[in-house]
Image (cartoon, rainbow, N blue to C red; front, side, top):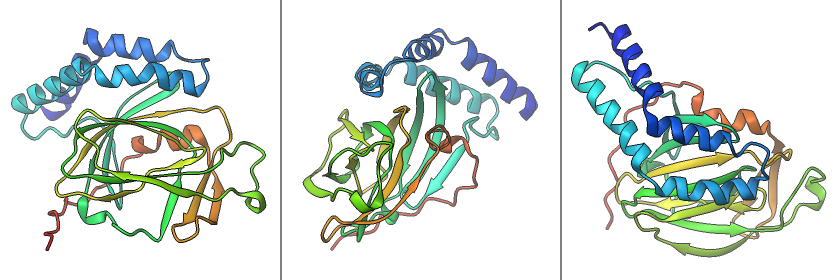
Length: 238
């Protein structure tokens, strides 16, 4: 089977899988709800791993049939690792994130508030350490002059199966360190607002910079294909 035929076969299998079709329908049915209601509904879907198992099963089968086949999911990279866009339906975009420990900073000079509502399910913790920062919610009337400060709330190591909710209108969740390559399942949810990506200083929590974002565009960012460099090895401690 040619690579083109293998890609078409995999697309057909994914489109015809009843578990994936059911997930897509359930996500599309959430259109019109407010972001918090969507997040409440999506959380249990991230815990139901049957659809993810079906997706991974189709991928493994396709690679067995055609070992040179690339995954049909667009990849996006940043300093923290690589994400693969899995599915976008209704107000939700699902992606898989593989964190590169070499890109993490245990003492970051700044933390970023992304502007979107995000759910993260930890599939493989690999020693991941995170912090939660929070401040007052900003909305369409946000101005840099009246920006709320952020404050550090807690640092912890999430366990496998943990579900972390990050409201990017007020929260930041910097990834600080890991002993391996953590794997996260991420749901990014439209809030319906005009979100602002903000960067705050970790010394005093004051705003350093802010920029308006196209939320739909930001939500689709993982679908923008980019060539990701090879993953590094975890840094040794001690």
